[in-house]
Length: 363
Image 1 (cartoon, helix red, strand yellow):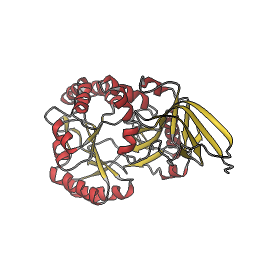
Image 2: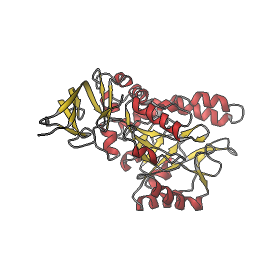
Image 3: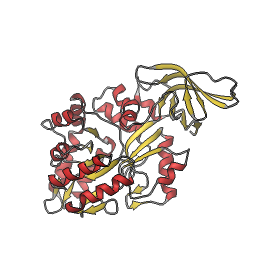
Image 4: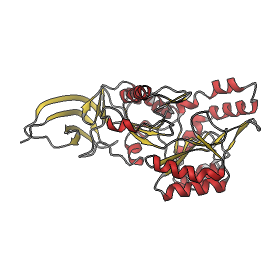
């Protein structure tokens, strides 16, 4: 007979898009589909339960100026948690956030180490800024520092050209990606424009962030190589204001950014239709607020991705891609409960009824 306090989640438990159960139990922070015997202090939560949401492009420990103190990082993580984001792929941060791993009340983080950028070709104080002959060494360093991911800056504005351009020679990225893979890490890259995409994909990259430069001629290459994209549409929405701010100094770049913004939805829908994996990421940190996961799912639906697939991009599919469990027997009880069926209307994600992390109701 068990003498343990338990949590009882009942209503509709969305183990998968088509695997719906009536209830689950949480004992010692883990999921069970068998009713425990002799349980005491049973707390019941009712509604529609999903695995804790995933933000696959987020920056905890970063703001517009660079690294932030731990109390600010904590607020960022709490904001994401309260929005239902319980698993974060931190796509580059100069801050050491390992202390978060010791907190049962904060989201779980999969780190990509610190951004690696070309000298003077990225936001100041964000990245290691290196030259091509140093790239392999820095990739190895961040592969060891991260949690199975490395983040490159694939393109950025070239001030001499006055427009976006690729940051790395093909030979350099090929050697760097090979080194990351040798060390067991996957590689992703920030890419707004088209120029760097073919070299990165043919060199074996695993994922591309933003991918606004993805064109019809490159889509088959991405699809055949299984390269995922994380569109961060809530970030791409800022392109017109960025373009306006840079108009007088870099008119070519500004016009380019506006074009990328104008076709953003077509780009994402074309990628999805071709079978390219698409995942939810908000690009929180930097200049964007945390807690925008529901808005990003809604943006994917606006782009034309079916609601259940947009939901999977932050739930079942995203967790599988990152190698983390969902609502599986024996898994950590990280879940979010809503008043309505998110498969029918993804807008319910904006108002979690309860957030459960490591088996404890935290929100």
